[in-house]
Length: 171
Image (tube, rainbow, N blue to C red; front, side):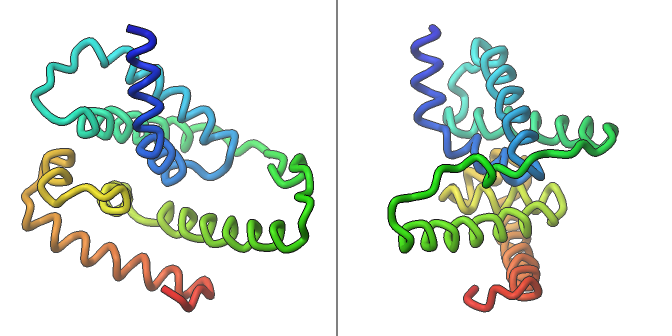
C-alpha cells in the first residue's frame, strides 16, 4: 500500500503544490502544510471508495487540510523566516539566473495575489489552473456548474485587478 500511495502522490504532486502555495505565506509554512496534507491523505486513503475521481478525492482532502491549517496559523504569532534565496547556489550562467529570477518573481506575484483572495475564490482559481472541468470543480466544491462559471469569471477579474495593481501589466 505504501508504494501505491507514493505513486499516487507523485502523480498528483501538482495539486498539493498549488493548494499549498495558495494557502501559505512562506516556504516553511508550505512545508508544514504539505506534510499535513500527506498525513491526512494517508489516513483518508483507505476510505476512498472510487465514487469520484481520485484527483477529486485528493483535492477535497488537500483543500480541507489547507483551510484547517490556515485557521491554526492565524492563531499562532508570526515567526521570522529566513529567505530561501540566501541558501541558493548561483547558476553558472548569468542569463539563466536572471531568467529564473524573473520567472520566480512572476510565480511569487501570482501566488501572492491568489493568496489575497477569499478562501473559496482561491479554491476555484486553483481548480481552474489545474485544468479541471466545470463539472469536476462543482463536484469538488459542492456547488452547481452554473455557479462555478459565474464565480470563476468574477475571480479571474479580481485576480487580474490585483496583478495589475501590483505592476504586472501583461495579464
